[in-house]
Length: 149
Image 1 (cartoon, rainbow, N blue to C red):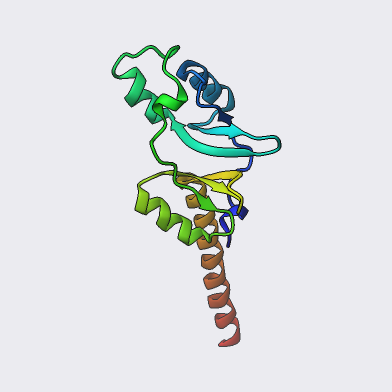
Image 2: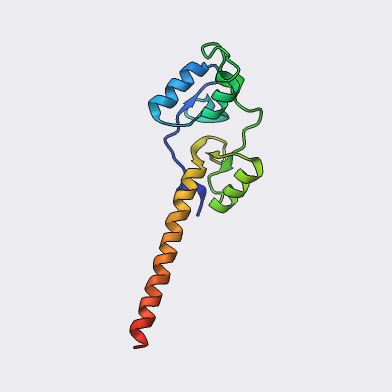
């Protein structure tokens, strides 16, 4: 299954000059734990970084920096790791594990933002798949009992 089928498409994004104070307000308003830092084109959003709630706590709150001065560009990591939208879910999980990230922006072939997938999203999808397998096993066992009476 391609990761584009499971990613969240309504992604909250900011530009690199957005203050951490404003970023935190957006996270609260939209009930999300991350924001994509992006450069907006005419009709595209090109991701260049990500800021998570953990980044804010460790990089701004804990060292007591001024959240109205520090920007998303200051806090985002130096290299953004993404997955192409056609990549399979399993391959995306491997990439996330390889890079030690819990959230992965999903991009089109041209590099435009398509969505984002998190570990939580993937656990939900995989648990639904496992539930269907468990139902299959139970049904097969019930069928066998009926046929072998």
